[in-house]
Amino acid sequence: MDFMPTFLELAGARYPQTYQGRSITPYTGISLKPALEGKAGTDRGALFNEHFGARFARNADWKLVSLSGDTTWRLFRINDDETEMNDLAARNPQVVAELSAQWRQWALTHRYSRSRGSSVMI
Image (cartoon, rainbow, N blue to C red; front, side, top):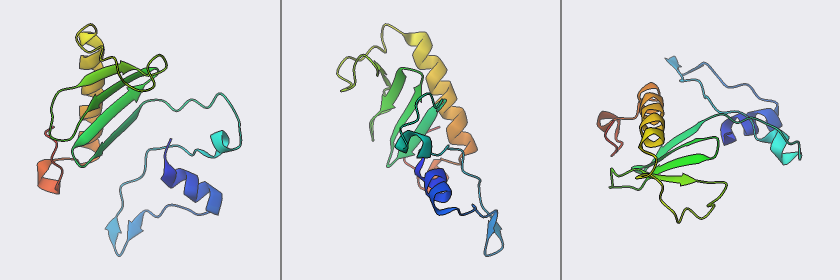
């Protein structure tokens, strides 16, 4: 779920394919509008983000987090631990490997790299 498709849907606007002659990378999120309307059952799929070096991947009830300036991944079962107090990474290395690979693929397709100003190593 993402703000961009939500705002576009609420405004009845279309996301442009180009701006000033340059191609724009399409957004990949889905609208929050159904959730705002109280409609249950919206499958959001996997979520990924990087902001000022902090990054996360979330899929189902797993959330993988790495803080800014730290390459260590921490793993949480978010539905059981909403405050992210119990790091399960050591007990679930296969989940860490899978989610970190998914995050890396997302990062590569969304052009996050040191050359574009991100502090995160891919």
